[in-house]
Amino acid sequence: MDVPETVTAALADRQVEGQVCLEAGAGVGNATAGLLAAGAERVYAVTDDADHAATVRERVGDGNADRLVVLEADLRATPLATDSVDFVTAHGLCNVLPPADLTPIAAELTRVAKPDGHLVVDDYAVPPADAAVNRLFALENTAARMVDGRPALTFYPPAMLAAVFVDYGWTVERKKTLLDPVPWTEAHLDAHAEVVRGYAARLPDSLGEPLTAMADDLVAAIGSERTGTMYSLAFRLADG
Amino acid sequence: METRALGDTGQESTVLTFGSIALNWLEQEGANQLVELVLDHGVNHFDVAPTYGDAELKLGPKLRQYRDDIFLGCKTQEREYEGAARKIDRSLDRLGIDTIDLYQIHGLEYEDELDTITADGGALDAIREAKDDGKIDHIGLTSHGNPELILDAIDRIDDLETVMFPLNPVVAGKDGDEYDYEAVLERCEAEGIGTLGIKAFAKGSWPSTDELAEADRPYANWYEPVDTPEVIRERFDFAAAQSLDTVVSPGDPKLVAMVLDAASRSTGMGEARQRALIEEARHNDSPVPEQLHH
Image 1 (tube, rainbow over the protein chains, first blue to last red):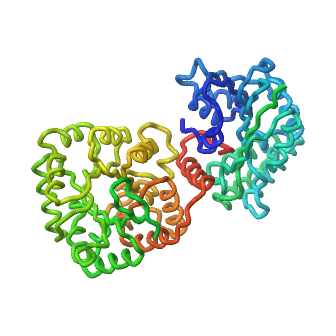
Image 2 (cartoon, chains in turn orange, purple):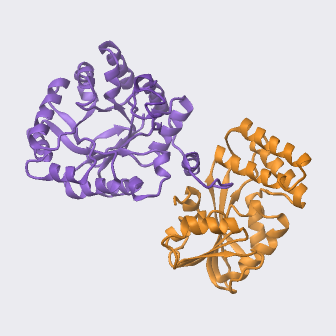
Image 3 (cartoon, one colour):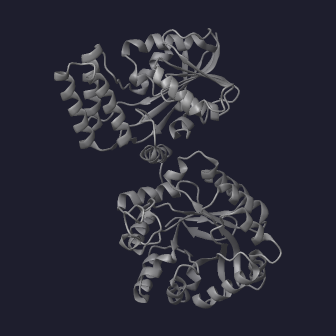
């Protein structure tokens, strides 16, 4: 698969070759593909979503059987040993975490990282107030809150995510802008609308149907939009 | 307009090269005006070929008028000595000049063509002979083909001074070896070979001829071009940011003024924006699966 430019750029100034890596929140395996392409000795692709696990195996499994381990696990409690990973990535992860999970996951990633380990956290800055995509993201959050009481998306300023990891002993080594602007394509907006549809399906029709209709209308109205930025933070864990 | 060294040729080319195929679609008077417009914008590198209809003939008058201001590239699709020697003389004759500054092997596509070109009695013999005779100054190559084939040509043609190949955000986002023009750029930089970018303004393939007859296409380009000022500026800035020495203008004359404006006003493009364009193209192009993230 083609490694996204965002991943390539985030890893470009990092030591990946020969490293034992962990992609936290593997999604469709974007960072996993980048880590393997950059010569990682082994990549643990961890996700709590069975569909994502299958997608990662399908997209990047071929030819990497000896280097790729796809783990279905909760990121707050992975089966990985303490001090076992050289390099951790959280590429586009934090914005989809329930906010209450952020610090337990930071704690767990710190536990599995070696004492001199490295970490890359890539995420979206808070979109500008006048961005049209905000309307779709807000609808997504409404749907998520109605179903399980927590938002689907939370955008953190880079300083905030940095502070979360600094609290666990990480030091920020660099900050970089990955995308400026962020191209929210029709495919991305469809994927977000699909999240709304997923929540809507779990609600009574009287609630779910208007949500779905609103999502469809928003996707049609927005089409695509370039807005906001995506950033990358690189950390190292202080010795001792 | 910004100029850049064309490899080690000694030529300082403007960052925009005029693709003179655009002249083929104009009457002589319009062709003269277009060349004047291009020169008014400071462009000093022109590219033409005998296969571009009447472009050589229509370029002739203004080329001769401004010969000292124009670095001219021409090409041949001939692969053997006789054909190439004939084409060089024919182009000189049709252009009405004594020397072509850069003569390029045109559209290299297959390994066996490279064998023919470099063999005894191949096109390169004719091109080198023409160089000794003062009919051409520098030797180049153009290809839409496999980057590995271009690298191979660089290995096998010691006196190769420039290469021309496609580069745009769609191509840049693809990882396969068949799209690895980055490797070509790197090699050229290391060896002092000049680089010319084509297809910078390509949007995609035309719809099939069943859907849109060739005669009904709104542009003469053999691909569907981008055609609004903002997107043209963006595409130019992107291509110019890829460490190409110069970017060739699109083949339809209707687009040339917009491209000249873009090149004149260009102030570069940052890496985060370049990545945004690549990611946008990749997702617009992407089969499955749909993704929330970049």
